[in-house]
Length: 276
Image 1 (cartoon, rainbow, N blue to C red):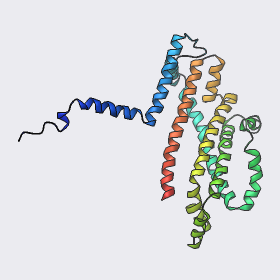
Image 2: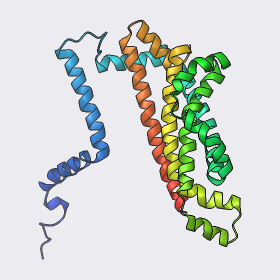
Image 3: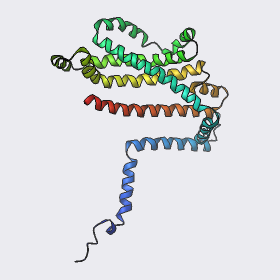
Image 4: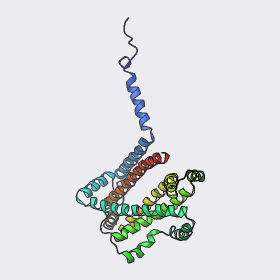
């Protein structure tokens, strides 16, 4: 019997390109691919618009020139130093806010007296625009490291506290009663029941708080900073270096993307821990 020549990959070579094309289109249609395709289309349209309309680069430079300026700033302009300074200020204050905010939030959620004492202060200070505190903090702390850490901490502290209280307050009381009936101590209930149930809410507060910390630190650097992305952004704007302004904005946007992706990965891991 002769071999079946209608089966197998070698018997239908004409279908391979079609299948490959369909596979490529499928991959391009995925949400992650679409997000980056949209970014590429916008950048390409921006580049073409600057060329066709002959726009003045002082107002809107071409993306290709911005990339060149960005690379030059990293190589020769000290942008790496500015980035490290800004990141240290943001995350230094943020981690302080994370520790204090979760601790106070748990304490407020499990103690009626503590909640009564702290509630009015938080209700008064949370809506207050933290940027308005910059002049007062400069008077109290100067313009150095303590000032930057404090402004970053204030940005993240209140969202974390409020969301921690909210998350623990929404915990299923049946789980608490079951743990108590099984002989769990107060500390064990907090660690094994209340905190895991409040993880989604706490993480929402972390997302909000970190975003506010980034905004406040950059704003503070624009006002008083000598080193940092905010200071670099303000200086470039003062001397009409629009390409450098856009380059710093690209760094800040990239920082936001990286922070968001890291938060997503941590959220997934915390979700597994919460389930376990």
